Length: 151
Image (cartoon, rainbow, N blue to C red; front, side, top):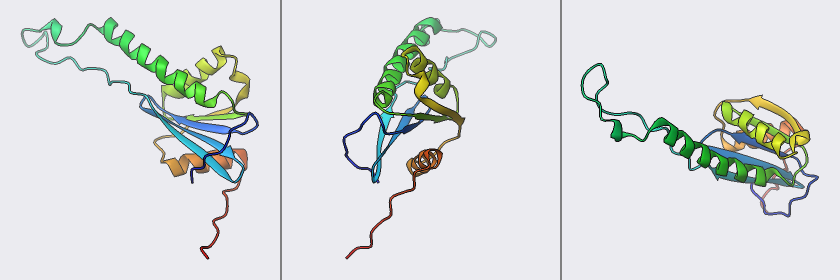
């Protein structure tokens, strides 16, 4: 259930994050507000062609590693800035994710003086939107709103 409600600093939020996307769940009175933030980060290009052991190798087939790393870092910086912006105006934060992204987000929140809002960091594999919402609700002790029977 996604609702459009004004969001305040008293509302807790959770984020499931990896390098591809982030699910931001903000608990609001009577429901939650869920936002997906895609990273638009390109996967590292694999070097193609022959290996040096098997024959000729064309160094221009793939950009140099340092250029690829700078591009990846720049794309991730934009992504993390968007996630931090989505979390900035909320109370306590739960960070969930399968890999390095949750630690990188934690470091960015600390650098931006938001580290004191982090309630917990947990490792979880791939999750659906419903699972993320349920995990955030459970962590903060907020029951799901009851569905009313149709008239």
